[in-house]
Image (cartoon, rainbow, N blue to C red):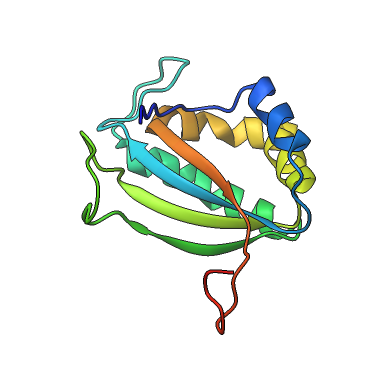
Length: 143
């Protein structure tokens, strides 16, 4: 399996996601890798780490998502790769739930998000973003 982190979704990737037969809420599994030092596209000087720059983005994005019906299900540091192999471990994992795939695309495509997205781009070395849906319950966790 070849894994390649990216920083921004492509229009083609978003269109392919919208074409999927996914109904109802969708959760996004974020595997985040930060730059050691934030690098802003406009060349501004900063002492921020990549994680600190990304946190500035998150401070605006999380309330934005929640005001539109989403919710943060989990966020925490990646600690140890227990199974499998990877050259590097991601730094942080987060799961954000959106009301629908359409809501996700509307939220991340909003002009307001681009405004504070500069911090995201400055801090991220790359990420994997995996759309997941719930199929199991407490009684039948595997669906």
